[in-house]
Image 1 (spheres, rainbow, N blue to C red):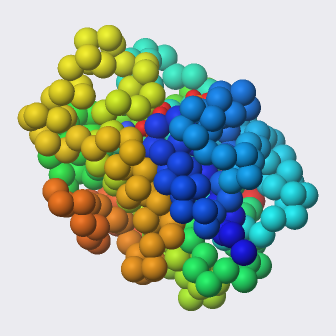
Image 2 (image 1 turned 180 degrees about the horizontal axis):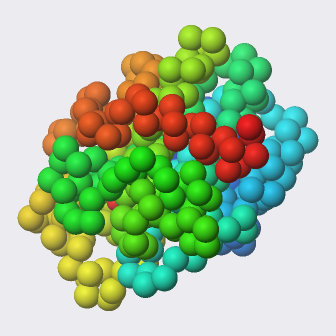
Amino acid sequence: RKGNVIITGASSGLGLATAKALADTEKWHIIMACRNFLKAEKAAKSVGITKENYTVMHLDLSSLDSVRQFVDTFRRSGRPLDALVCNAAIYLPTAKEPTYTAEGFELSVGTNHLGHFLLSRLLLDDLKKSDFPQKRLIIVGSITGNTNTLAGNVPPKANLGDLRGLAGGLNGLNSSAMIDGGEFDGAKAYKDSKVCNMLTMQEFHRRYHEETGVTFSSLYPGCIATTGLFREHIPLFRILFPPFQKYITKGYVSEEEAGKRLAQVVSDSSLTKSGVYWSWNKNSASFENQLSQEASDEEKARKLWEVSEKLVGLA
Ligand code: NDP
């Protein structure tokens, strides 16, 4: 049978390119988990994913109710789950004030981390039940959260501190809207959320890899300077960023190439090792990359897991 893969945020950018790459193999049925049904349908059509290869299901990661409803809807479809790709994200670099999810968590961390945390915790049971030879749970990471890289050292740097803001509910009322308890900064909130994504993947690996056989991975697909992620940025940035990445840093990668990379992490039989953060070199060969000290801190990962469980109602 074909594999079934859920991809969050498959309506644009990396998620769409990955859906396309997997659909083209004719070995996968793609469940496009998206907040905008019509946009997702149009996106699938625009890149030529054929009807029998995908299903759009509604998911708004900035609402925990929506996450639970999505899981119910998926289960009612009767499809087994063989791979889950947590890809969706928002980035609000120019926001002056925090905005919030349905439950009142700061929007970037609430969507990118907490929404995906609940989704992947609930769907782990479904992955466990699958009889597929290689079951995988992938959480897309980023270089920007890794302070051991040049890109990760552009201020404001990611820093989760002692998680006091998160533990307080990240709601800007009785706690800060930032994980470390500091002043709101939209660009930093995104980077922090990516560190959470990478810590969560490793904690999943430690807790569940042996027991379930599921491969847990994260990746940095390269700088895809053309995606919608930068839609909130100032116009001049949006004009200059792609050529800057192409000719100066040379980290630029096309959406199509990045989609192929993520598709490899979903289905390539050579990328089965669990707990790995994948990257690609100039010749597009994959390698196991090193995470920054904070993004590989086991104690922080455990604490983040426990605090997040409380916030999403799992503990
Ligand atoms: P895009 O903005 O193109 O795609 C993001 C996707 O997330 C969109 O489909 C968007 O939906 C969806 N999304 C946003 N909020 C929600 C929500 N509340 N519920 C459901 N879906 C939501 O960005 P990219 O393709 O660049 O980003 C994809 C991933 O790649 C992210 O995890 C990002 O951190 C990562 N990444 C990107 C890099 C880059 O250079 N672009 C580099 C490294 C990592 P909609 O279409 O409705 O807006």
